[in-house]
Amino acid sequence: MEYDVIVIGGGPSGLMAAIAAGEQGARVLLVDKGNKLGRKLAISGGGRCNVTNRLPVDEIIKHIPGNGRFLYSAFSIFNNEDIIRFFEGLGIELKEEDHGRMFPVTDKAQSVVDALLHRISELHVDIRVNTAVGDLLIEDEHIAGILLRDGQSIHSRSVVVAAGGSSVPHTGSTGDAYPWAEKAGHTVTELYPTEVPVTSNEPFIKEKKLQGLSLRDVALSVLNSKGKPIITHHMDMIFTHFGVSGPAVLRCSQFVVKALKKSKTNEVFMAIDSLPEKNEEQLFSEIRGLLADHPKKAVKNSFKGLLPERYLLFLLEQAGIDEDTPCSNISAEKARQFAHLCKQFRFSVNGTLPLEKAFVTGGGVSVKEIDPKRMASKKMPGLFFCGEVLDIHGYTGGYNITSALITGRLAGLNAAQ
Image 1 (cartoon, rainbow, N blue to C red):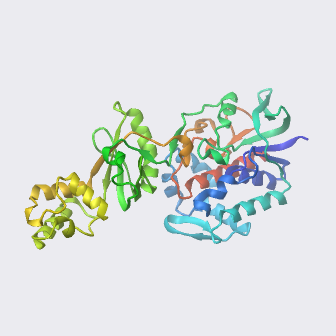
Image 2: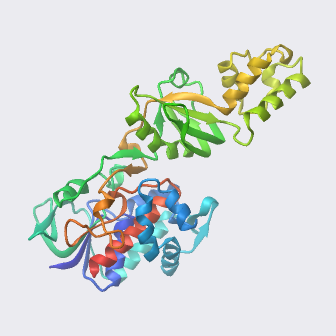
């Protein structure tokens, strides 16, 4: 049988593309090499599925540091509010949480997957799971269908590649589509991990001094070679046995990767401002006040509540202050050093966990070769790309899924036409 549209990949962008094409009345085949569709979607948002974000479009683009600007045209056709209406039309009631994140009222990602699969079934989209694609069929410099790994070919007038990146491989994202894109004349930019924990060889990390310690609402920066911040994120973080992790670290990770590329020493510095709401002078005078108010008290007791206890004791040690020293014996110089460490504790990092441990893939099919309004290849007629296979990546918080759903929508719509 010949199809109008074949969609490769049953993740968010592929499911959306199949629905969009089906709604145009096209004969659609959705193929996925896994045994079920929507596997990445089912574990997204901690199993609750953060379907999109309600921030204004400009804010969303800012949260997609990897080529987010490419999406402006797409947002003018189908945007985050359209995603919300789309899901509500499928019977999925959504609720807004912090920072504009939108979740199903059920708090179950599976309900989102089920609603998408129900819509696909209503549109009579053919589905083939456990079906691995080996290559794209190209005839007379035009897409003609797909070649399966078992040697079978299936013909179609257009193909939508929604096969994902190389992160979270157990959901099926194993980078299969990059060689197909290159064969069709596309450039695949270098792949790297983003939204990934960061590694460090610092002695305090190796000795596991702070392992398991969480810091809330810190300002974490990646520093350039001159010690100036490249990027700063105000969020939580956690120390691990190999380095640092948590939301602030995940957001900084792609900047660590890029800074390490430029570095000649194979290390980059990060800095923690553990009290971002105060400047260093304010903090210094507050510390002087605490020391003056309790001259006989041990410094660790006088400073109690300023920082989490383990971090407080760690910074006292870094400042060369014995935690049991009476406050009256602490010099102004030592107090200033401690205040400085609270505001800027610098430590070196040497990399990240590998791409397969990352939440999101950086790099991919170059967006310069994709029509931003149609998601169509500028190199190969009949070929469309959407989702994480493209060189577009955002922070976690509903931004990547928004990009996947919007690009999937346009790819499916235009592939059908």
